[in-house]
Image: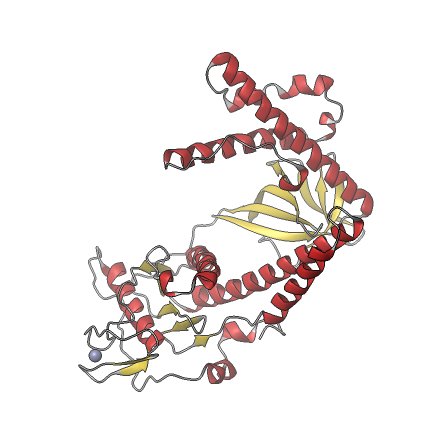
Amino acid sequence: MYYAYKYRLEPSDAQREELDRHRDICRQLYNHTRYRLNEYRENHGELPSMTTLRSELPDLKQWWDGLSDVYSKVLQTVVERLFNNLRSLSALKQNGYGVGQLKWKPPREFRSFTYNQSGFKLDKKGGQTVLSLSKLADIPIRLHREIPDDAALKQVTLKKEPTGEWFATFGVEVDRESPQKPDRPKSAVGIDVGILKYAHDTDGHAIESPDLSAERDRLEREQRKLSRKEHGSNNYEKQRRRVAECHADLKNKRRDFLHKLSNHYAREYDLVAVEDLDAKGLMELPSNSRNRAGAAWGTFLRMLEYKCEREGTHFVAVDPAGTTKECAACGVSTDTPLWVREHSCPSCGFTADRDWNAAWNLLSRGIRQLGAGRSESTPVETALPTGTHSVPAKRVLEAGSPTLKCEPSGER
Ligand SMILES: [Zn+2]
């Protein structure tokens, strides 16, 4: 299995300069290779192979001052990167997108470079953990969580964020089979992403989105200040960084929340049923919140899926069509307007919060979907808890689910 681990680097000023210099050489090589690609196509009527362009690197070093300062495998990954971009471009074109040619990269759009297979290692220097990079430096790194002992470090990508901070992301391979998923899951949960709350699950938790209004206010304030600065001035540049920091802060807090939430579900259950993103009725939402909600839900699903894989938990994404209308107790569909927050079944009398009712439907669909094609049917019994009523979110939060307890302070 393959994982990514991201850490903050703490380079000295001199190291920061070196990182930037290497990044810029890589950027120039990228732009040069792009130019060579077009030149080759004009002369030969076809694109060169990646190997052809990589084999030109030693010749380039003859006349290109500074190119040899960068570790040779790093240069190779720059050529690879161009070809990867080309591949995704042509994939897009086949799908009918009118995308132009590969773009020339200005410094602002070329933020990272990669050591692949060799030329890097984690080391200790004077009690401090450093990332030792060939031909570059030993850069202090903040290892806020351990990389597993049996993990093989395959590559590391150094990236400068718009805030000016540097991060190292390790691609790590763990030679370990993912744990077996139980044939008969003992614990299962359905999760519905609602509109008013972040999520409802079938265990009766209503999980609220973190309150980031203070962070959003700050971002707006800093953006307003930026608009009053003279473009290109020193003050403008300083303010631009501040805005970038606000963006990064918001993004980190959102991701942190989604990580904790997905960890909780993947660890606590044998089966997790969610609604499929593509089928999700995001059209119900007003357009400004739609994109953000959609993006967050997509990120959450991806996290949940790989974490379930890691923990040996079944992950089932189901078609959510009609889950809010169907009665979880008897299956009869009733058309209720969206603003009616309570599901009340005219057929069997079952009442529950609309979103909880939906979560139950998701779970039973998930179980059916998983059971399909298996010799043994109904891997888990589902029974509606008696007397499920809407519990005020606050009460649930106080009672505490493991997820919410470990949320960073000041978020709510
Ligand atoms: Zn009913």
